[in-house]
Length: 147
Image 1 (tube, rainbow, N blue to C red):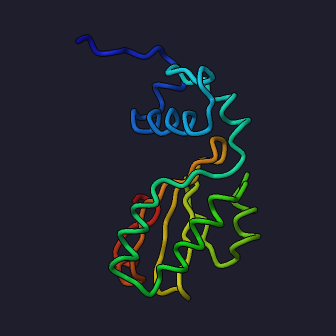
Image 2 (tube, one colour; image 1 turned 90 degrees about the vertical axis):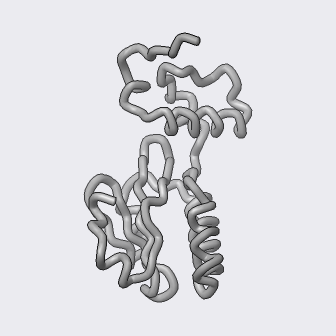
């Protein structure tokens, strides 16, 4: 079976996983025939107003070990999934203690700063990728701008 090649353009700047997520998102929202493998995201951007968080399983796995933060992580997930942030300033308005880092990364304090959650946000496509969740001590051992 021959491997598909993609034309130059936005599709080449996205990983296969990102394209898969975008297609899945379109399918969930019934945007059939509105999204191509070549990166035609303009229709998707108009229709998806709220943020899509990838992936809740990371949070679930964490709160199963650290049960004291389950409710806070569920609340963060629910609030973020309903958010329509267009810039880091809008995040700071809702979460004043959040730290804005380079490359659209944001650090959220969970459960009174006992835990740290790092996400990377693509404001244009309204996507949030969870990059790290851990204790404050674990957070101190990583480079939050590169994880």
